[in-house]
Image (cartoon, rainbow over all chains, first blue to last red; front, side, top):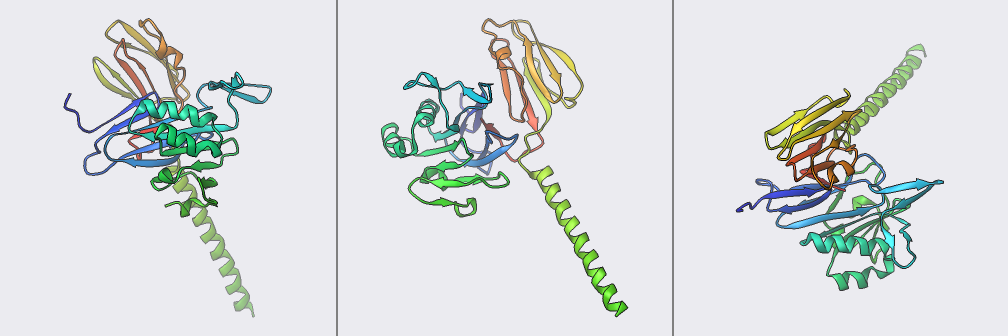
Amino acid sequence: MGVTDAVVNAGGEVHAYGRHGDRPWRIGIRDPRGPGVIAYVDIVGEESVVTSGDYEHYFEYQGRRYCHIIDPRTGYPAEGVRSVTVIHPSAGVGEAACKAFFLAKPKEWALLRQHMSVEQVMMIDDEGVVHLTPALAKRLHFVLQPPPKIVIEGTDPVHPAEVR
Amino acid sequence: MMRWSGAIKLRIADAAVLLLVLVWVAASYAFFWGNGGTPEGLIIESPAGRQEIRDLTRKQIIGIAGRLGESRIEIREGQARFIESPCRGKLCIHAGWLTQAGDVAACLPNGIVIALQGADHRYDSINY
């Protein structure tokens, strides 16, 4: 169609092409437990920002949240994770990776990243701690106040100010 | 002695005023430039064009003409949703209430897209 610069938002999943005039596209990532944005990323070129969370499709029963992502190992809704965000050139790969990382334990990340060729992942656990791969930590800008606790894969927990 | 005491009181009052100003600035910053998830308008895209509804507090139901027929959109308390549409799958209706700035619902068969617009214009799009 000849469109070189665009952002497509398909129900929350964002795919960006090109740039916004003379600046990058700026994509906010929603806080899974608040009304606003937890962080943003700037995109130049073609990339998708895909998130799977427990906050759009869920119900609560007797104080327990049951989300729409089912763990095939147990047959029950996944627990322990609020959201997973993946940035990848392919929205399809990003979507699949979100679900895999949602169900994986952090110690399984390295294998999963290698297996799915996914380098940029953010997982927010059920205590609000943000887990990041080093590749995403380099380009993610946190805006949430107060800042969340951040753990970068393979390192000690850090303050957001130290991430960039 | 009185003047010294007066000077101390003045300093405490100054500090109180300064503190108030700082709190006010911080609160203003959070309000105007904070996470900003509160919607301030609804954008409706249809085959007839684009329209914006600014008042989301007044309860209303709007009929929008699409390719297949009329879609009905309900607005109230800062939220919006599809309640009727002539499409087959009714995915637009199942999308439910849009509550946060950046939320989008679409009836592709009928060519109608609704999106809540936020006061925070720092982002080109919101991922969720």
